[in-house]
Length: 146
Image (cartoon, rainbow, N blue to C red; front, side, top):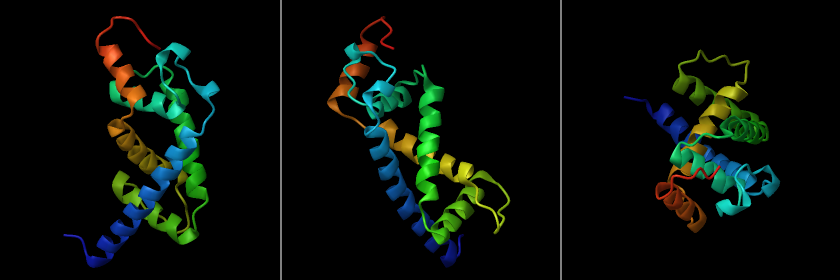
């Protein structure tokens, strides 16, 4: 059983992860349509829609490019946080991924992975008309839409 201190830390980390997910999603949504790899006929309106489709449908065409973009956005958002919050997130990420925690080091890649996991969890359950239509169309067609 976790001590009260760990419960408080977990609550604080969860709170900031929610904020970070919202920030990252908003940045992805504001990414120019020119960055999309799906064609105009896909019906998808944003890079966020495209990311959600790939997460939900496990069709990882151009996945590395999207994944790298999300990682960079997550790292950028982490870098904007106050030191104490970075410290708490770093400690939590080390605990989650089984890494040794060092008070003198930040682990932006590790924290980025933790944020990214939450963004992808959100993307897995995100729906809008365009995503729903695209996925339904994929299920009823043998054509490749990427």
